[in-house]
Every structure is written in structure tokens, then in C-alpha cells.
View 1 (spheres, one colour):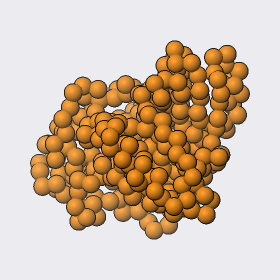
View 2 (cartoon, helix red, strand yellow):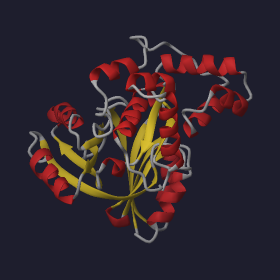
View 3 (cartoon, one colour):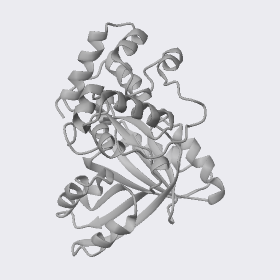
Length: 320
């Protein structure tokens, strides 16, 4: 990622795109009170620098596939190659190096045994653990507050997509197999560009994308780096929480500015959280005085994130 400094307008733009990744620049510009050309140029600059990109992703609820957090303990010399290989797979995201490279963690969507059987036979792996995600306490709109705090409530209301209260029922389409991978690469690709890429008419592409969005099957996310917002330390927390306190603790953490994502999972550590802090001192204060003080938290395992082989979408421009 090239050196980028975010100003207030950049932060507002990223917040707007987190609300609706396909929002026309003209509508964003009108809400922000600037020229459409200014908004378009800002996004083009951020995307060209690898600082941000919009991705269209299939919801796991609609696909019927499970999400698994997988932890691989390995020798540090092998971790980068393992992470790169996992990053190239279409069924993985958030491929991270943890604890100086002694562990690789990633999110896997689909039948875990197809990948884990292969991994468990790897001669250089020390252990493989998989934890199925049971419940996510945050969604695309309520994700990390450090990235979604630039707009006023009135601006948010004007930019929020006007979805029906109840998601529409929707069956898979022959177009999905070619359209969804294109949106996963570039969620803001124009309709003519998408039509050329998938070999369908522009009207068919428009209609199918509208159907997918009304059904909540297609979600848009911003792929960016927390360091752009002034946060220098990232880590994963694996918490053992008393079952009767799980909903309370997960809901509480989801409201903290330090938490980018939190979910209930299977296993002895039944809650996982991605945490971002300004520095190591702030991380210590948060874990000791906030997380550790919550009723029901029995233990906390803190794993610093050393780097990413892949974030939310396919490997490409904008990944390090």
C-alpha cells in the first residue's frame, strides 16, 4: 500500500461506502456537500494506492455454507508460504500471521473437512483447530466504529440503502456463478463492465444485482487498513466466557471502538474478537481493564497480528 493520509472527506467517503458500496458518487457528493468529481477522484486515488476498495460478497446465510475460524500452529519459517497458499483459495478470507509467525489464522467458508484433511497431513504443521462461527455480533453497518464514525445520523439515514423490512426470497440463478466473482474483485464495477465480463445483457445484470440486494444475499464491504485511521496494533482475542454471559459479553464488546469484529464460536474458547488499538499500551489497558473486568470472562488469549496475506476479498491490488 502506498503512503496515504486520510482527511475528513476521505473518512466520510469510506463511511458512506461502508453503508452502501454501490451508492452513486452523485448521491454521496450531495450528502457530503461537495462536487461529484471530487468524490470520484478521492475514491480513485484511494483505490489506486491500495488503501481502499469496495467488494461485493455473498452472504453465508444465503449460500447455506458455514463459516469456520481455523487456527494453524506451525514453524515460523513455514508460516508465510502457508498463508500465501491459503490466500489464493476462493473459500478463505482474513488470512493472518499471528504471534510473530508461529500461527496462521483464517476464515474458511464451506465444508471444513475438504481443507482440513489436507492440512492435517502437512508435515510442518504442529496443530490444526477449527471453530464454527455461531453468531456474529456485528454486521457491515455496525462494524468497527473507528471506520464508521465520520457521518452524522442525518447523513447516515440519507445514504442507507432502502431495503424492504423482510428480505425477499430468492433462488440461485445461472448468472450468479459469473457475476459474483466479478463483484468480489470490484464491487463498484459499472453495469456495462459487468455485462461485458459475464457475457450477459446489462439489463439482466442490473435486475439480478437488485434481486440479490433485496434478498440480503449480496453485501458490500470496504477492504482497507486500520493503520490509515491511526491504529497501530491489531490482535485476535480468544475468550472463554460463561455460557450464560455469552450474549451479554459479545454485545458489550461489539459497541467498543477497539473491536472490529466479534463472534460466538464453537470450542472451549467460545468468543473471538478482532481488536485494534493505538499502540501496545492501549492494548494492555483495554485487555486488562475492559475485557478482563467483564462479568463472565474466564480467560483471554491475546494473539498479536503480525501481518495479512489476505483480508476480506480476493488477493490483488490493495493486499499486502
